Length: 248
Length: 267
Image 1: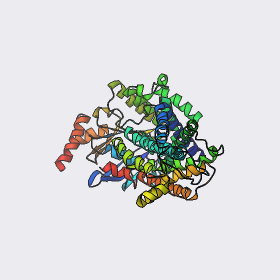
Image 2 (image 1 turned 30 degrees about the vertical axis):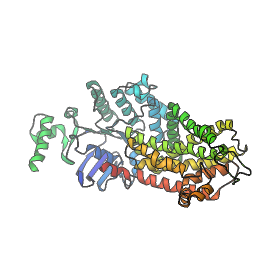
Image 3 (image 1 turned 45 degrees about the vertical axis):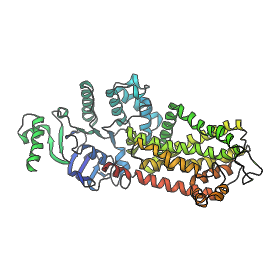
Image 4 (image 1 turned 90 degrees about the vertical axis):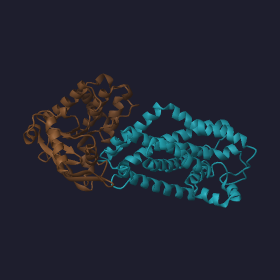
């Protein structure tokens, strides 16, 4: 199973009524890869995440999680996925701990197992002292850390993170990026990190450029620089978007 | 996923509903105050206006307060059913619904678990009302407190399932006010909660048929009979059927392939 890509998307398309928001999207994320899905607002990133988490059902194309078609084996696929949505999803009136217990229960974890994992994950994101605080009392950065801890509770092998750093200060953003890269490197977790912030593309990262629902380029950051003959990721991205405009 | 996973998931959903309920103590008191206002003011005012002849399950003339008590218990369940709906719409707006929806367990189970968790709270509030109603001399036979339990559960399930169905169709929290106007009030007033249906039949035959078709009427009658240890078979069948229909439609509404979620995203 580990030889199979953590996420494989082939010919994915999606429309909302007459509006085509994703068109023939194909790429894969291997185990241990930190892959950045780079695209402007409205590029189709959130729709892609909604399809990969089965909030919407795809009709065109195939999404496979470790080789399993999500349409046919949704439950097994969702067991292996951890998600951080763009929109905050914590219950503000519950404590950090209760939010985490709720998530673990939805994945069928036992109370004892959950308590151990919560202690570990909450420590890793530096919120051990806040575990009994209501989420409403936490800062935006702390809430995101709770969401990161939560998405790891059921030991997923693939993380889908939809613009997880939006609205965070520089320190919180850097913490999130470092934490995620460390998880990929040390624990072999695959991560698909959607963002419109070009500076979140690290040197070693694999990049998928999504623009107006279409994949414009896939490859390591250095490869894209070579391919576009540009000195920086920002210039490479602009070049890829302009190419699309010229073609249009 | 094994049965134990399902059980843990159900326990998690129920615990969350409990915690939220405990965080909103005002919700408990308002759920009780509403029917008590009806009992203390409306029933007292109409005590001598509305005469209730001897109708089953009663074996003698009864005060009006005793007649409307089952309707007020059903009112507690109805408002709680709508609170399940409100909670689902709120969860969707606040984003926490997504966490539920990306759980590996099937959606029909998640929705049913949410429904059952809400029904547990509804039944407890109904019993709390029955306890306070003793102050108004509403004293069913002792066994009635036990025999009413299945009726409370079935009625709670029906109204909770209706709440779930509505939540799949309501787009925004702001639209929830219309539920009051178009669901709660018509269901309550076009029923046998406040007046026996033979009274309604004499006054208006079309309204009588509406009341007969209203599942809320059957919840009221099931509770009324169950309080005296009797089963109302027609009401039982209607409530089981209505629960099954509402829940099936709610599951359809939350199905990503067929339901309203996808259509809503398109708008």
